[in-house]
Image (cartoon, one colour):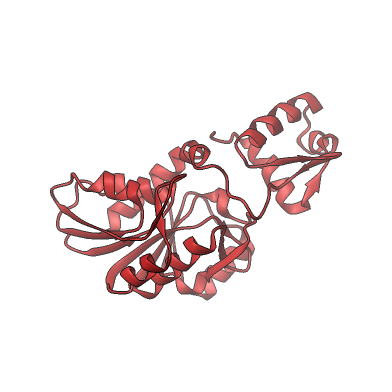
Length: 253
């Protein structure tokens, strides 16, 4: 789903208060409880919220939204981010691209580039780019996760460490206000950490729903990335961290 302004305010309110009653949300938004209830139901089905006794809160910090739901969640924002990334990727360079629906949109935006060498642990990225005459795709070995066709494990990490690329393009599940980058699967986190280590420049692609979201595993810190591509201005606390770390923030219009 693409959130409308009211639904965006509901999500922001829940993030700020952890849990909140439907009645309180209705008062804040100046709408009927029935309207809030309909919005919450849609957002719960999309995995963005969870219903608790007496109110609504954020979903589990230990389990990600289903891949099929993430494919259609904020897809317009992800495509704008991908276009912004593609505009800055030069021809004849090397890339490492990890698992994620946003990185898959980046791959689609790169199909007309020339002279790219792409190393990836994402079968979907490889499938998107393998037919591009201007791109050589190098696919990591390892264990394939059926739910999203990501490749993970120690074999994957060992493979990635053979390369040193111009740009590492990574997705993430959570960016906390202090700049901590988090995800859910420890195997996926370790692969992303290897990508950061083996990239001369690190570009993070993340839509606005990742700001302040909860996730279990620490992957890295914003100070380890060079550019953040997103679709909305980060919250002030995070924006301050990014400025202090000299991270270039590109907001895709």
